[in-house]
Length: 197
Image (cartoon, rainbow, N blue to C red):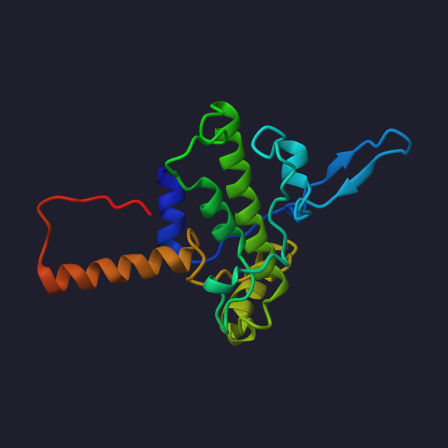
């Protein structure tokens, strides 16, 4: 992590993006009789089209309407999330898995799955700012508008990332505060243990 980036994180909780990242990727298919058609990456047929070896039996990929099986269903959780689906797909089992033995194709599938999941989460946060009570950040908006007026730059759309979004500045601040509470309770540590989840 560069010194400038660390200094930026210590000084502010806001990050600005100069240009809007694409909200969606386009996957083009070319049927024999027609011209090309675009399909959404959320389409259940996009993964089998892009990765035919792991989906060799023609099974569909994840879609937003995929439901849990009866044993896993609860009153609150009826639908399968994208991360749950990919966790199930990546789970190591005793039987032979063509997905796990695909080498670089498996690595590409993992990266593609993580990008899809992250993009889906960011898109959800972008579209549901009202549900996240973003209007409570009036002082933040006032400070941004003042800085925009002073510098003469243009202000884009403000999107607040909650502390539950991993990697956001509020999430890192929350982790830091949790770590300081642990240090106050147990004292300074003589060694670090890394736990990957």
